[in-house]
Image (cartoon, rainbow, N blue to C red):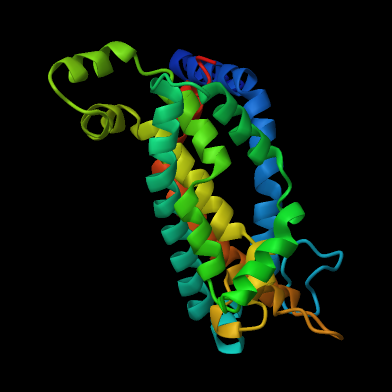
Length: 294
């Protein structure tokens, strides 16, 4: 009778393909470590904001970073305590109309500065840069008196009408982008009998879509987050308030429901995140190509 000896189990080495996948994963993490660190740095406040919106009012802004109990009904209460859809509608009207008018007025101006040679073009471009660097507070008093005398304060018109005259930053951005378009295309269109307006519409605009998208996104985001303008012109009329003023209305003298404030902030941020997610390729392309020529 032979005794059966217990042999220790043989530890099998990890499969080669598994080892290769792990090495590739570690190499990818090491290669993108800076991008991962920056992403975590930017995402941490957003994640904390969402967690705050799901807390109770007593727990918000305490030492607890994780909700003791989850309260998604805070997003429903936001619509009960404030007319958020009305504020959203005013913000959409302000942002969309201003963006469309700014692009309609800025694109021809940028085309003239970039592709048309005339006396004083450099001086006009320098004037655009000076206007871009001018603080808006410098002209606040005369502009407010002008709109008050016209009886337009308390509405969104003082914020929308100036878009008819363009925006210095959008003109600068579009001018720099249009410089990257070869002039040979424009010369060929002129030889075929196209005027300047037809050349702009048929040749320049299709080639300048990334730059126009970038300028439009900048203007839209600025109007969506604008607080100073609506506070100055619409604070006396709550029916014309935008989301920025609506968020400020959550603050009272003795108590602030920070969970509701953060819930409303998340709702206000969501459209911008969705828009940037779908338009990021055109936005990045427009910013990348801008400034190749000076």
